[in-house]
Length: 303
Ligand SMILES: [Fe+2]
Ligand SMILES: [Fe+2]
Image (cartoon, rainbow, N blue to C red; front, side, top):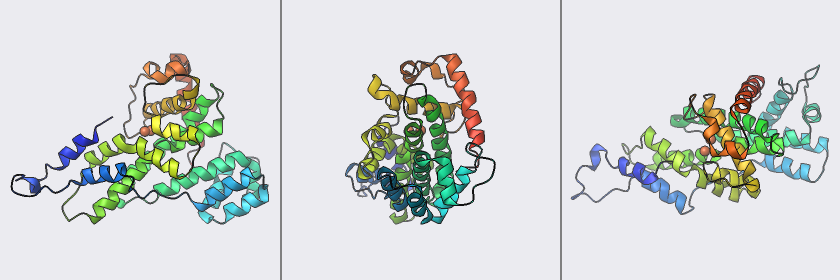
């Protein structure tokens, strides 16, 4: 992980910042972003209302029609749920054409998972034009990590839906950091830019703590918050860390298949701390990679 202070230092090396002895130092944008985050003055995105409603209705056992009605209030999420029900992973003999049928085919827990996933995706759609490509790559990485997490979950008695969601959301802090950078940059004086390499350093250095803050605000259960905070922490201990280990390994599997901001086809997965905890050897890892490629193929169009 990179130290944001070094990113901040580099931001001062612009042609304008030549005479440090005479001119009063202008606070670099990078320092401002970091301070804003540390002081908790970040504007955190709110969880979409439909996701909250669906969560509440499923918890209250309100039944399929009520859940379908709630989903129907957001046409883009409704359309995506129907599309998901018709994807290769769930498709039956005939295509479903309305939300209630889609909910019946998927089941309530997968629907909740899909709605949360789609809500998280809506955060990705608010990208500033300069960051659009980065958002796309983070989304693809998140989805790939989610699919890999689901595969890994079955090996360690973790609910597959929980693992999927944890994988999907693990890097959500990156989106919040990017939004914060874009917001500050929009208000900065002309020519006071922050370069792409510095933005990336920030994203990497701050996304875990920012993701944790976001989930605290969204009142997300602590096992998921733990994943956001610790998915790059190499000191995994035992049973309590299994979900973190699953996502950590899934994150690396995604890098191995190229779905990452830092793709690495040569990565040796078996040497990673999570591999020991999950008891994965080279043979099991190779078969997981094949399964992951199949999942990617099957869900290609779903999200
Ligand atoms: Fe991460
Ligand atoms: Fe990641």
